[in-house]
Length: 382
Image 1 (tube, rainbow, N blue to C red):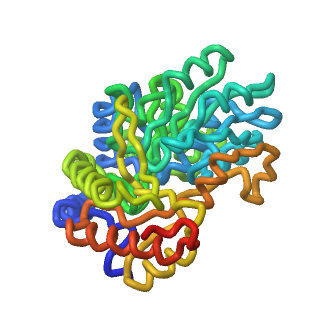
Image 2: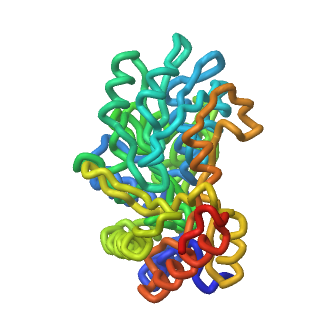
């Protein structure tokens, strides 16, 4: 284990106590009382018509595709830079993912790239709030409305972020959240689908439980309820154990985000003047959830050598995120030069709410030293 890990979930006694309550209740499975309470909490927090707790964000994206009726012959425009779950979700239903390039400053989907990719086969758009930065939803919604397309927000990394004063996750017709171990609010694994249209929420809830609805609710019926399988469904339920943890985590989200904000501010102070590094920039109309802190290395810097040196000092790091269009599974025809450049030059450094100021300073010092050591002589700083 790295002495300064790349990620670390902020789980403790409050979450353990919530899990103990589930054990005592006798209902650890999905769609029980804790799951229902979590869904009500999410509905209130995000101001949506419905919230469906599911096993992960990938499941939420899959359910969104099904709810909108995407299928063979359809094209779905997806953000190229980010974890490629939206493109996978399109493939699940037989649709074709079409990759749109991203902005070089925010790393989020470029609205002009989206507009240029719309064809008669296009049915929808999936924007990604890249590593916690909300995309440009005003422009994206205008494009969707102009062409009669649906818009989904992949807010997997953005719990707690905002765009023009609104919560990330509620910025499109459907929002998909992740509660994976590196997110701002975490239950190890988990997700949710947020819907402004209650019919979409109803469809997602039914399909998430094999197409038969809640076994917990059926158990309250006097007599012998016999479920009827009305839809092709999936086992996408979130356990009540995870739901209980998330109720606590969502109650702590402001505190945890403040701590991540402080880490990002310290990195900006310590690294902002380094000519071999470019740091993330946050537009004034939005806030960042800081799921990941990625820096862009100058083209002269050997990224692999920098990563090796950091890891040798016990400092966790990673390759940032993914350029979807070059992944073999998709066989994509699009070219996304901005995304590809970011994919080749970015590196993720430790970012989580448990980092101390001394640890952040250690990471910054080690990174500055490593990029100088592994830059070609023509650009190496004095």
